[in-house]
Length: 198
Image (cartoon, rainbow, N blue to C red):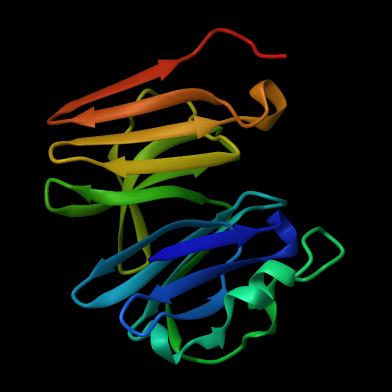
């Protein structure tokens, strides 16, 4: 089981809970957007579009080798921009960097037709598209709607044959959903809610 905490440009933490041992481990992860497993390894995708923007993918072979932490410490740790997140103090080399890009945002990742793809945003062009990363080269897979899907929080849910990505925009609707993308078979459907919330 995984969960995260993030203070934006001030840093963040991703937590791993081992159900068998009931122990918790953590590491640094600013803007964790996805945590997934592949070939027995864990991958943590991070994205922060503050400033020029940055996206990374970290590979973790064994989360039990990360920094151990207990639930009480997590609960007591103060939150807020003046306080560094718990993961900030962790600087081991257990994780391996797969890629590290500036001026590009990987908002989500999922398996699409047997390929690992990323919901990708280019701030300079204000465009969002699906892309693959091969040998540190970003390749566009689908231009989507030739528009943008860049929101404060993105949640990706995978169902048997459908991918659902929900997005919130704090300035428009606080933490309420303002848009979603449904991907099923070869169809990409984007729904923008037009009701503005107080």
